[in-house]
Length: 340
Image (cartoon, rainbow, N blue to C red; front, side, top):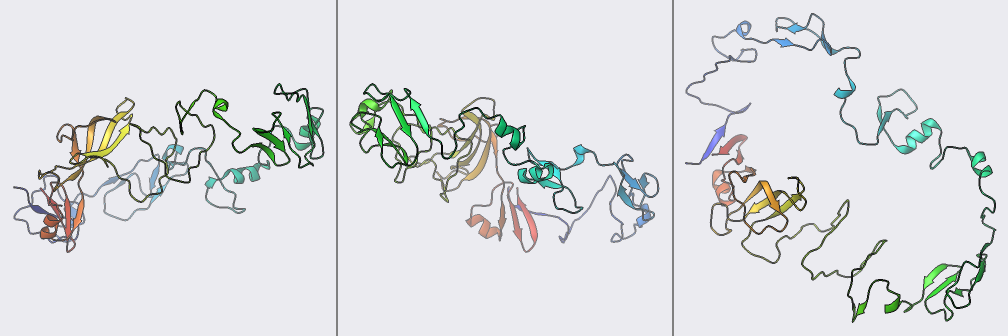
């Protein structure tokens, strides 16, 4: 029968009928009746290539010794991991412990400007091709700009606010001092390459090379949404899964963790744990492959395991909160209990 059983830890008050320790006791033995400290084994043997004692390589507890790191005793493999693309050094201006340097720190140390190439400023200027464009130079496109409507030469010096239409009627695209603009209503159905307009919808796929900002709501009525991004940022405090179904297990599949795309291990909520049609429930981990389009519920045992939790309060409160599940830890009055 499962119940809350007390866990004995440091600081707990234990009342035990018998204690058997086949490997002996550790510690100084000062709190044990009839056992002296000298009779307890307390040996420490160090790696002589890394750690040094002031008397040999073995400490037997009979006298104080000093433990220190030997010169050159710490290898690079023993240093804590650092972030990728990071250089360790000191850019503080004084002697100091090494720290992770930023790109700006490194450029300052080696006296290189941001974005510099392999030559200095004088050589860069000397090697520019003839016809260099400066702030005062004109840009002339001779016989390079044409749309079949008579425009063959175009010179723009950046000083005029006038616009020159690429098309004869100027209804689609204009070029002026503020840049190139698409006129209001200038793009019609025939200007959408590889797409057709069907009412107020685009019948074929659309590819957008740059950012797309939607100031209103985005409603997707298809069967699936695929997001191919390196990082996904969601502002909402809560995420609702399984919004269109009832009485089903719900979770997150970590794709590729079993060696197959769109399939992987899963973190999920077993809605029918302990029975009751969802009145209870428990967080679980599926260690077997779960497909992204899976519709079956979680099966415990060899398929995965349940996640244990910690509850603070009485046994009665734990039962009310449905925390009285196998493996859960309960803390009451600084004492620890496990449900088993």
